[in-house]
Length: 200
Image 1: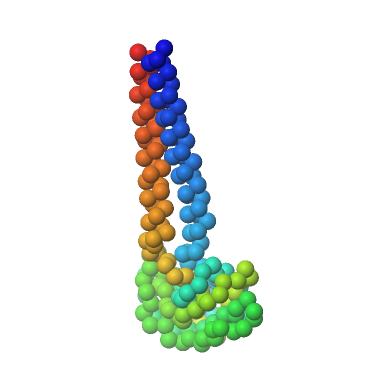
Image 2: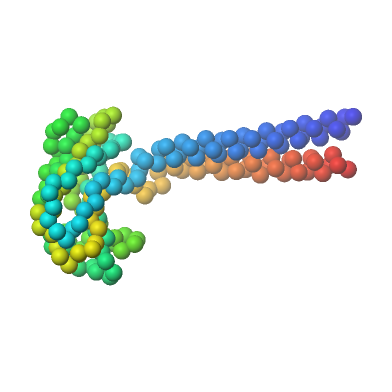
């Protein structure tokens, strides 16, 4: 009877290890998914960069303090890599209604290449000092478009601090996921080998 009892305990330990691994992994993934928004690019306004427009307004959700890069993203048709010659006005208001950015831009340079034929043109840096539960507000207007970009998509994006970086937070959670995976594998092995011994 003693061997059966020891095998039963091994089986239970294996199941517990697997449960801890799966539960811990799911919890860590859920936490990382919830926190991921802190470091993701915020897509604010989309418009036709080839023609003049009226004022466009959109909420600007910001979740952390520090410098945020405001950029004009341009998706060119085909292999069009010509320099954009339009004129754009961009303003940003904080939750209290104060204007913290007001830029008129007519020179965009060559831009920063990104996957998918998208180029990003730096516009300004928005420094956030206090996080509020209310959204900020972004407004934009194309004063004069660039006809050579007809059919392309223009977009204003805001890049928060740490975007694309392997931050200590991500590193810590990567270790957690590794431990959870180890518990799952170890628990599986304990269950399998325990089951084999019991069958004999």
